[in-house]
Length: 267
Image (cartoon, rainbow, N blue to C red; front, side, top):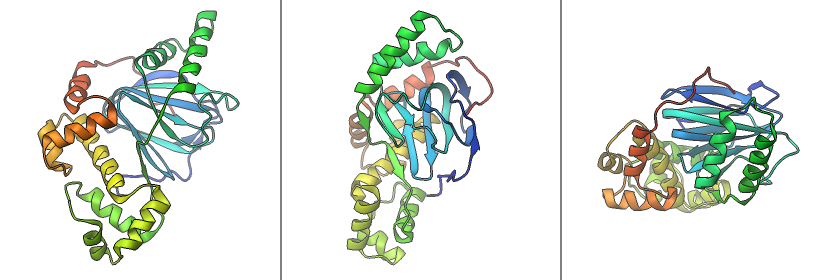
């Protein structure tokens, strides 16, 4: 996948920070790993987190759970208000041992914002805040917002074609004919490696590209056309079902959220 950087090796930063910071559009935090778990939430913009296994992406209704020891890199699409919460390796409220996208309810959003606003506070109120945050994490539904990294070269070739042109509407058979692989073989590979069908994966890929374009302020109709939907209304329907709000609301949210506390990029 041309957009994915594979962070096989990364620097070791033992403690996962709890803090709020700003990333400019396109800014990256290079590959690194922590001895702690980390919750990564974008209060504005769109966040992409890449590991060797794939790329997870999250707008403002999603957060990313990064387990302790996972080598990962961040990238911002649009102005990003980044909220980071570190948890000790023996404290895993959602019980997850792989990177996962989690739904963020309005309550969980406010808890994350409040907890990261005063990282130096050690008072009892903050401890109670963390206890409720952990309860909410435990109950947060998982969301399939991931683009896995293909390992089979035949699958990788087809994925590269789709990523290069999200508006390409060719069938799996036609894409396979170009790359020299049969439709049945490719269909089996999508299920085996990704756990999803080709149409499901292509929708994920198109949503990933759509979020990136929206983060740049691209109009909704233009995004729909560039990402392969037959109409703006079809795009809006898929986007709403995937993220819980319309792409227009996503655009307005990105414009309305002003810069938050800033600082140098932290792992």
